[in-house]
View 1 (spheres, rainbow, N blue to C red):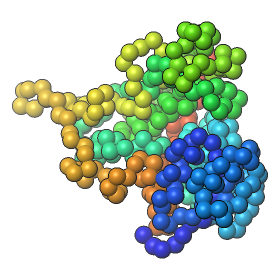
View 2 (cartoon, helix red, strand yellow; view 1 turned 90 degrees about the horizontal axis):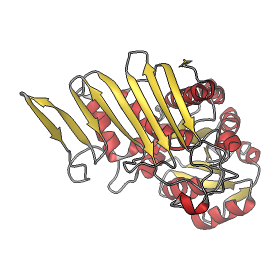
View 3 (tube, rainbow, N blue to C red; view 1 turned 135 degrees about the vertical axis):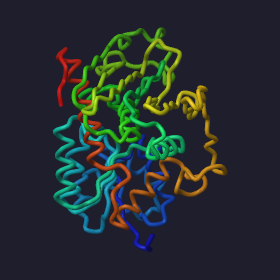
Length: 363
């Protein structure tokens, strides 16, 4: 690590900025935030008051920060619809970009981002912080060691029993491009593809449902209070069956509201020819050794294993922030590459398209 200080602009000062990115970014020694941007000026002012030092400037126009020659890196933390054009404009202006997930609302917009990164040579990464969890990093290391053999089946799970987000634009299909599939299903899918190191989908079948959107307030039981039925325009649940070019199958299940007790979020399970693993109750590896079935549960605490190349007490968000800064300073590949995130978007789009048409979607 060198002593260079990257100067950053925050575009989008809503929940994901305040709860994930900004708490991590202010800890980074090689980064200084110099601008807060949001279309609602009050949000930018509040973000500066909480995370700034008082000398950062405020703007409601993202063009101002990407045209600012003092800005080295832009954090795009806006609703999904604007990810693509802000990212492309920033890359073309010579800025590195960290964009919050999902990459874009569809594959065409994601491809524009990927192409801009390639053309400009600037770093682009997408905010899939669940890769940075200790359990994810440990399972990835095991997969790279080959202990699972040929992984041919996986399940990516993002199920909430009654946790519909009632703030911001989460329920607005125009702004978000979808509901739980593109919001939380994207994390589980990214995690699965990454651990499997399989980014070549062949075809998929998908279904989406609007079964619980219209529940009366007293029947919702929502963790974040009643949702507005008139604004709940996205699906409440979505499911996909994806077949990869090498024959592997991935089942993706996602929901914000479903009548199911066994709910987990941002986890994966998979089966290989030598062993299998899941994240259903911590990390568990199953297999057969000398004729006996076994279940292995590793102790993934900071004092037991070198599963994380980070610092003690470093959260997934902290690690994500640090590694992207290091990728810029050391001119190395981002931990989450735009090519990988593009494949995630392609599969999400395939599931939505199959659900809409009732047909198999072929990549």
